[in-house]
Structure formats: C-alpha cells, structure tokens
Length: 74
Image (cartoon, rainbow, N blue to C red; front, side, top):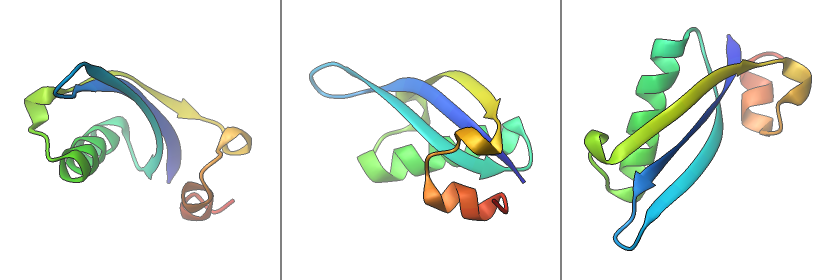
C-alpha cells in the first residue's frame, strides 16, 4: 500500500470548507473513491458537493496519521 494526501474543499451551508487528509490505498483511483465516500458520509454530502483539487503520493517518513502509518507498514 502507498500513502496519499488528498486536498480539496466541500460545500458547507455558509462557505467552501477546505480539507486535507491522508489515506492509504493501492492507487490514485482507489484514494479518490475512498475520500469521496469518507467525507460524504461524515458530513452528509453528495459526491458533487466535494471538489478534490490534488492527490499526491507522500513518502512514508512524511505521514502524520498513525492509522495510515500502520496500514502502509511503517
């Protein structure tokens, strides 16, 4: 598995809310799907309300999230 950082924003009733999360997955398509489903379920949003601006692979030593570190085997 690889570590990725997903950045973007989503529609909040008052304004656009930026986000940046770390996730572990096999490829970029899997990360996009996982991010849309996770953010959508936590904030009760539809997929069209979430804008992902960047998905970048990050090295293991830059991962901050402990769950992601465990998932990539660090």
